[in-house]
Length: 244
Image (cartoon, rainbow, N blue to C red; front, side, top):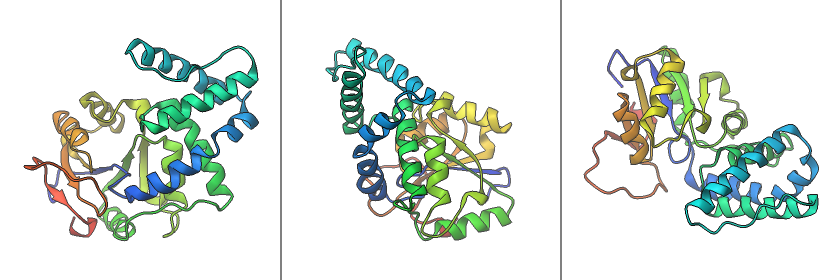
């Protein structure tokens, strides 16, 4: 972080800026309980039909891999709805980093935030760190498996206020999966920077390994509630942004 070549901080969300419990105990249950109603009300919407097409392709890949996902019917709308909900729940149960799933979840969360039913959570050190980094002319970007929409909503509606004014760019799995080095190379290309000019902070060793393979600097977030990691850890660690 003290290296003068570091001009971008790229942040994961879950377990890095935001407690894992908020994701698993608030966001995921909120979306799960509202999937059926959301799909019923928006079934004919182009974005929903596009997501369903992607989900059918994903299910075919699951079957080809020998998995046993719920059927995804394409006959009557009633059967389509019930089967779509069942498959989406099946993906949620596996915490699948599915792009169409994350898109649907993001739009459900948008309704929750707009209705005042949801408020995003961030660790206490995040808002002052964002302000400090901006004063230092360091740009802040987000890379999460949640959709870019979901990312923006979380930071726009935090209990600490709207933090989106600090954030330069949002990246999600449309640019690639987070455990693949190529995803981080594409992010660097999008930002028109060398990978070495970017510091990636995450709670996931697999993600950090991929980012380092791409040439980025890396820092492991060891936040309260995070999963334990096996030692030795080959990345610098931090338990608060106040020390950065």
